[in-house]
Image (tube, rainbow, N blue to C red):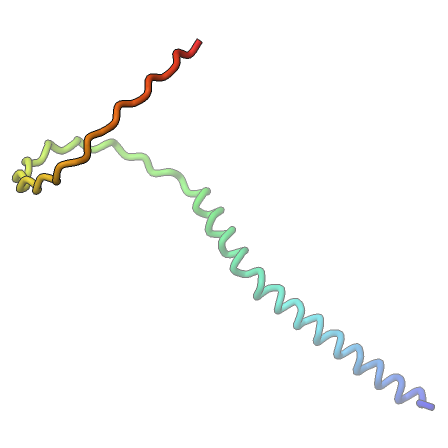
Length: 91
């Protein structure tokens, strides 16, 4: 049978253990959620910024045409095609 002092010491250890586990859980939650919160924070700050509007620039002129390329080799003869069957009129 345990004495009152032994029971009190065990309860104290249990309380300390619970506090430590609670802190560990809070730290783990913060580490897990930080990337999400940072993304939301940067998105919110990007939306808060005033859009910069400037005057459109003058379009540039057309560039010089390039030299024509060499003609490609012709392909060989193809097989004669069959005539298509006439389609029935749609009413």
